[in-house]
Amino acid sequence: EAGVTQFPSHSVIEKGQTVTLRCDPISGHDNLYWYRRVMGKEIKFLLHFVKESKQDESGMPNNRFLAERTGGTYSTLKVQPAELEDSGVYFCASSQRINSYNEQFFGPGTRLTVL
Amino acid sequence: GESVGLHLPTLSVQEGDNSIINCAYSNSASDYFIWYKQESGKGPQFIIDIRSNMDKRQGQRVTVLLNKTVKHLSLQIAATQPGDSAVYFCAEILSGGSYIPTFGRGTSLIVHP
Image 1 (spheres, rainbow over the protein chains, first blue to last red):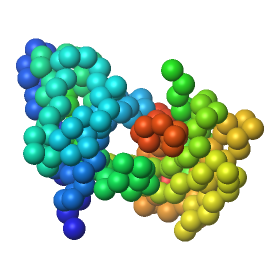
Image 2 (image 1 turned 90 degrees about the vertical axis):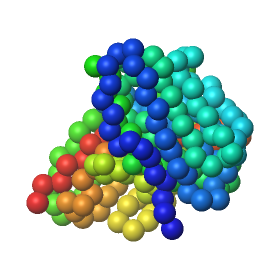
Image 3 (image 1 turned 60 degrees about the vertical axis):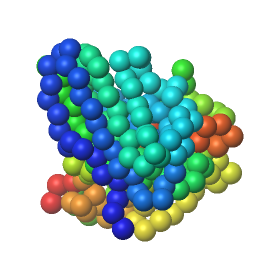
Image 4 (image 1 turned 90 degrees about the horizontal axis):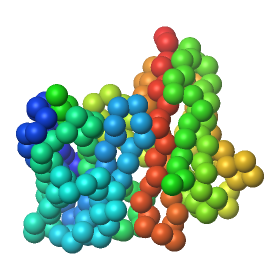
């Protein structure tokens, strides 16, 4: 069974540009989560989808971040315009049940560098 | 807001030694805790969990200890191997809430052969 995949693995952009990150969850997982880790700091929750609906987006830092999950399959996270402080590793995770926190599978992450 | 923290950002050990990674949490209402291992180029991977009604739980070569009195969590790795080199994160969850884990900063474990 394929795990959670993320694309791209690395992205280097300049301040002010737009970047779109993609996450493909494990097939059949209704729950999809986005997290971010800024260098040397903790992994922080961004938002949670249940199928195509945003269940919790309390962690989204500001309106430069837009997450979508059209059709309830893959998800995209767009940053527009990117700022220096957006640099970090963006993780996606998926789970079958909403409260299966020990069954939340993470992707390898996308390392975003904003210059 | 309350958050999970770690005492040591980097831990270096010799192969075969036992490793202890510590974590302090501040939300006394958290009732579920998880340790994750993140290897280079990969995402966090679940290692072991413990509920707040327990003070110890053992897995294969790993033991998690929970001290609710001082809000302290530790991960013990027995006979540490080079393959254990990774960043380890603790996370706390308030299961009556959103079920979203709150992560600590992470501890880098370096195992020297």
